[in-house]
Amino acid sequence: MLLTPEKTLSEAAVKRGMRLVIGDGLAAEMMITLTGGAFLVAMALLMGANNLQIGLLAALPTFTNVFQLISVWLVRRTNNRRAVAVYCNLLARIPLLLIGLIPLIWPRAGNIHFLLIFLSLFYFFGSLAGPSWNAWMKDLIPEAQMGVYFARRSSYTQALNVVLSLAAAFGIDYIRQRSPNQELTAYYWMFVLAGIAGIVGAFILAGAPEPAMEAKKDNLFKLLQKPFRDQNFLRLLWFSSAWVFAVNIATPFFTVFMMKGMGLSLSYITVLLMISQLTGVFTFRVWGVFADRYSNKTILAISGPMYVLTLLCWCFVGIYSSLYANLALLVLIHIVTGIANAGITLSTTNIGLKLAPSMDAVVYLTSRNIISAVFSAIAPLCGGYIADYFESRRVTIDATFAGPHYNKVLHLLDLHQWNFLFLISAILTLLSLELLFIVQEKGEVNRNTVVRIMRTSIRGNLKDAFLIGNLINLHDQFKGFIIRRKPG
Image (tube, rainbow, N blue to C red; front, side, top):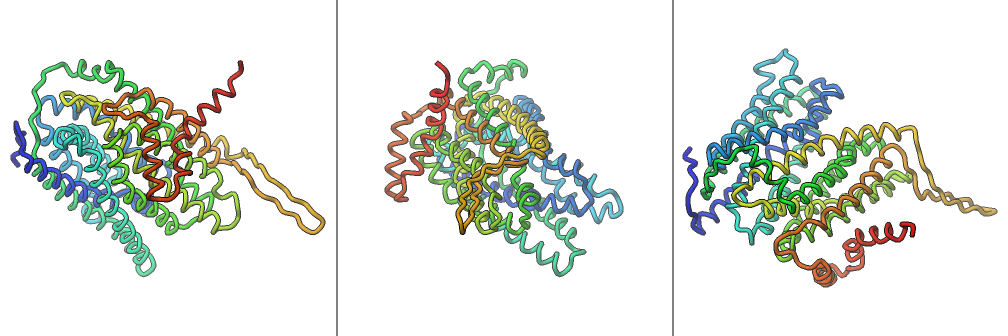
């Protein structure tokens, strides 16, 4: 493959590249959907994985991000971001094919160990491809179109994820009912299909052009110091670290809570996750338009408190014995979560791309990814400790109505093991938003102006500005409450 960067790109070449990047995104989404989430956990359990191995599977995607420094070195040495991204993606996706061939090559071996080894290679090379891809996209995608473009790309990939997840889940359930002995074989075939899709996607990506970057021979150690000397980017690192830590304390345990705490079946959980995915699909473009028109920071200031609200709502899940009441609350939580996550994912990606200088984008973005990876890895461990600590502790608040012929107890609050964890995560997440407001973004519009415009827009389209208006001001209201509470 000829992957030489070009000094100048025509408008037609840029548009062609943008289409190819979407094609690779769809192939990568197919690959990730078939090899991750509940499917991977179910496959590992069938292969005899213990709790430690399941935990390791969950940690691998995060831990391997610390190796992204190698990507920085490769880009500086080759001065070719496309080559690094394409070849590392190929090396990452070949192991998926090997996992699918495990029963043929090692029929009697400890298959779970091979699964861990090959997935380690998959995540390792994928982590090397990420920073070079991000830096490449920063120069390929016009900045004025970045929000709308990535919103459109994300909406396509999320839609594919929803359709493919449901099809795979129904297919696995059918096989489990008719031929349970073939369930593991079905997972192997899913890895084969994922590997093929991933390799095809890498070749599609290779066709996208790369604008040449100026060669720099700076010392790598000195380069890595640059993001930490950039005060504005350093503020973004503080916010990103605090945010991912606060969020990931609770996020990995939502499914555990629904399965163990509530006894919900996998089918219920899958449908709830699909609801969240669909709402994300339908709102990605809306967030993208507002991000381009105003600022990504403002979108975070709106979607962040929305996510905090969902964390608080998790504290009330399971408080009543009625399954339908709990399911209704879970549906509402997943709808709002999908909307909030769409805005958070889009804005955090774009703000990192905008604040990173073009000449050193790969260094800046890699530093951010590595630091976020460290805090993302630590958070679930802290979350597990917190959940264990509160396992034998409980806070219950009831309201009782008693009369001569009627007694009624209304459960207002019931905090135990997981609910304590969700409450702590909500508080930390809300506090982390304070760090967002010291970050400066180019083209940022006055927040009050944006709030007024969005309220008007939402009132005209949804006929309901009251709730959104309060969500927008939730952080300010919380801050004001804390200030009023201070003595003196």
